[in-house]
Length: 287
Picture 1: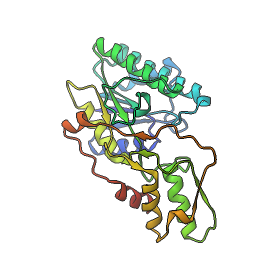
Picture 2: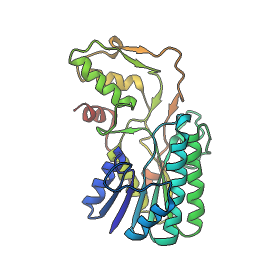
Picture 3: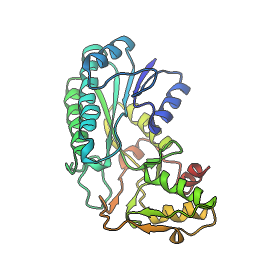
Picture 4: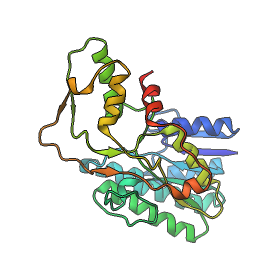
């Protein structure tokens, strides 16, 4: 049994690839610059891959993880166009395949309350627009008989996170300060609340979802919000330090949101349980 994994080099892709391999699947890992490259903006390439491999599963995790407006072309090409190309290629050449498309909590209207997959969307950025577009594309292809699943992700991390992500940046900076660095860490707003999930748990949620026969869309999140200040507390305390002695606010910073938290009632009802809490995540990433 074969699974094609687009975005295999990201943290979710790495954990999912390992899980699929351990389950005995042949994993075709597609990355931007790896050994197996497929341009998601080129339908002919996507179709050729899917036709040749005849996968049982396809996972589309590839994306530029930013909401910045200047990344609009990447969002359009990888998320919107890439999803359409995958879905059409499946329709033509592998109609029995199960397709998973990643979504985001950032594509929903956010009132500060826990977000459920049935809540309304809100086009607050071109990143959100691209995500919203893929949902409607998925629903259309589902009406044609294609089994398309969407998991809406909320903030989650792992040791694979790169330094451009704030939680990894905090861990790396704390380690340097503990080693003697005199640097200061600038944080925009430590009162912002978000989830601190673990990527390994999230990919377990992906597999829980794609194994369903009747449920096709679900929020995959912890349902627990923590202030960035709590993450700072935990990470600095691991080295016997107090974050207030080493952190400065970013002048004029405006947060994208005050609270971003999920209502994962659907995925929890299917038997998925996030096993890693914020303290365990911090220790894992600090190792």
